[in-house]
Length: 92
Image 1 (cartoon, rainbow, N blue to C red):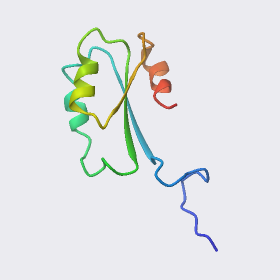
Image 2: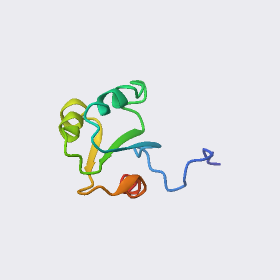
Image 3: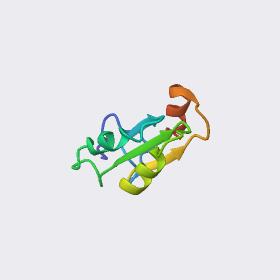
Image 4: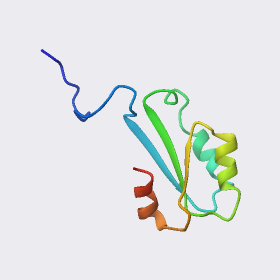
């Protein structure tokens, strides 16, 4: 008999993240570092992924994330999509 784990999809595959943290930014170069540093280190390297979706910030948000936090996946939205559309972009 195979024991199942509740709340995890039957399509779950080993190595796939079980938690995704999606952060939407716009003009956040001064804040995104503190935000990403606030994620507990004990979560990183486990089945957790951190995704930053940027709504075409005209500041240095992208370089702050890419250079300072290489473990976070950066998705440039290409335009200011607003929060709802940007958060959806980060879930695919």
